[in-house]
Image (spheres, rainbow, N blue to C red):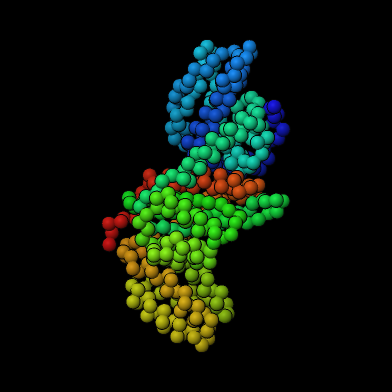
Length: 387
């Protein structure tokens, strides 16, 4: 059974994706075009793989590589061949003539990517022929296989580990729920950052974090010298269970934000913020601890809850002083993950609501894969020989 193109993309959605781009993922573009060309050859032959039929018009004859320069870099496609030699896939040429249309198709597959019927309609618009639901499912499965392979790739020595999470709206059983999107970023032996993993789940927060961290270890993550994160209860419990012997640096940015909840009046907020920043900007741990002691005494009378909170929590943000001074600026917060969060949110705003966890994970993985590849081939983030 084949599906007709029964829907069109809203102009507003098209313009948003076009402006904000999907200038990403050459490997996934290659996979989609290769799958489209294979389907086109199958239609040309008149039979499916290994089928016998009097309607057969030709025979498959392998593939021929073709490298094309695009705005996302050079991509080598596997162009299907036939014995008769009179077949050439139009989907490749159409895609190259209109990169914008291809990007929009890919964006729709990722952003909306639930209904195989809708993907079939888009693929028909892109490739110029009808595609069955089963064929579409097969093509999208190839994409998911690549994303899954990246999420399960082996890891190695990671000196510093940053952890963070944000939430996306996901529909489940007719209800809109918040799904936690977990991310782990590490600093490798060359001093470059890389995204180690990503996970999406509607499940219990602590269980989700613990499973996520255990998977990182099972993939070969070793050598972690410091974990940098916020102090969410679920993450804190999971970190202790999996990395209990590794020092922890509580994100100083979030610490300053958390402190404001204990300030008794608005007029005192700026003063408290400046005092806490002075602790974090101290020349060393000894000076920071001395400043903290004075501040606890300073606020003991006029802001007793704040003083108690500072005495219990601020020390968790001072672990960074035990590491090389040239590393400390990068290790003070988990703000380095904000670009990941911004990119995911920028594109998820187009989707508004993910129809399931799988579609959310697909988009998030694609985005962080791209950013991680940029980091791994870009400038050194931190010189590990510094002291």
